[in-house]
Image (cartoon, rainbow, N blue to C red; front, side, top):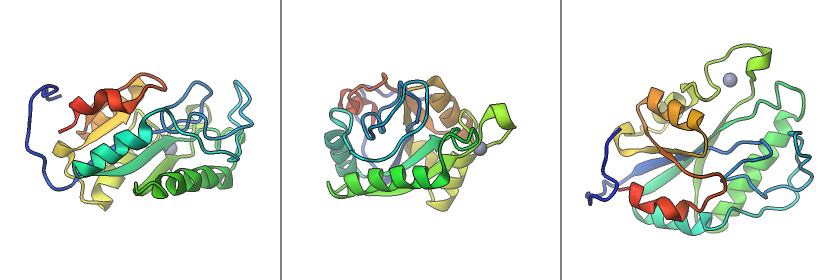
Length: 183
Ligand SMILES: [Zn+2]
């Protein structure tokens, strides 16, 4: 992992920032307070209200100015568990995309793993990196100029496996506090 936290670097034209979100009760960062009807300990959710973590829109706007594009990679193991459906996930993804799109922030794509380790092995669930690899291939991502932002160690591990530098942030923490980590 490169160390350049406080070091100035010229920014290339297009970079990619990959933002995970997770459906668990404690998480996260992108999804927190998105939906009501969250039962603690239960994955069930419906999109009724979109409300983002403090500072996320401003932080993404700033990163966009610096030339970043955004892709979301997310574990959605509740599908494998039968707790919610593909359609539920698509609805949440659409809400995320619309909410940010209305504020001038385009999400290029959202990749999700519908599997869970309790129900078999896959290669796409973080900390595995298949979805990152797919996204990188599909969008011609320069991994050396990209970051994988997450609030769990498995996000960082997935990034590392894919050769993308991780930025670990606190759960529900303002991404704006970490802007000096990005070129
Ligand atoms: Zn999977």
